[in-house]
Length: 69
Image (cartoon, rainbow, N blue to C red; front, top):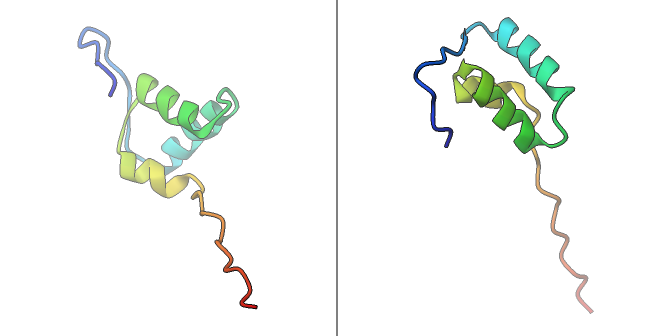
């Protein structure tokens, strides 16, 4: 978890449209999904549930059963 610097105020993103714009800007800088989360929480105060709702979900690959012989 980020250790917040209480002397440096971070902008609070509450509106979904503003949050989506910030995510679009950060996605261009990040190489992985983890980088998106890290950059977003370092730069802004956000509702993490709202961010998770905007980001595409990582669906697991289906596990196929081996055919019975």
